[in-house]
Length: 227
Ligand code: CDP
Image (tube, rainbow, N blue to C red; front, side):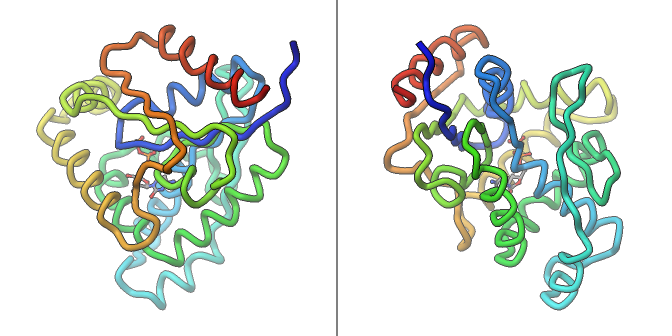
């Protein structure tokens, strides 16, 4: 049975597996995957490189029009990768320096308006999976399927450490723990679209689910939402 294409919004805390699930769904359903966090990370990278102080509204206002974000499909991996002013920055945005600043930058109203307008334009055609912090509440409040993800904090720390350690052997697990705690704190307590579960979001705790189990569970939700 062919289902109509829908919009899937995935929100949740740092490192709880949102992008893994989003990628799985996009591949399985032939949807586009947009990592909204990568957009905030790329804006942060631009600020760091250009010496923009996020606390100076004038500097932020002048910097935003200089930033062009786009996504390109990597034919080999099947992933969509982010470009900042036509430069591929998928790796650079994962650096700890960016992780340490991104939540401060993402809390700025002008930055959010800049990113959300682009995210909404990308979602016009449906057949899209987007993950982030405010996708079900602000970006796509009418998404047919909203998922709020969580996982045990220690599992999240371990997962992120294992992801970053190979390319950053000087990294300590404490550093990762502190960064996740701080980002979750800022993301849930900021004034502008804080992270919260949309009233109609379904909760997915994947602490003890394998990737296959989580996909199987969510595909059932997709089928229901798309029927
Ligand atoms: O991958 P991880 O869960 O660690 O974070 P991310 O999705 O790459 O997002 C990085 C940061 O961007 C978050 O900690 C938030 O501060 C911000 N963000 C946001 O404010 N709104 C979104 N829709 C997505 C990310």
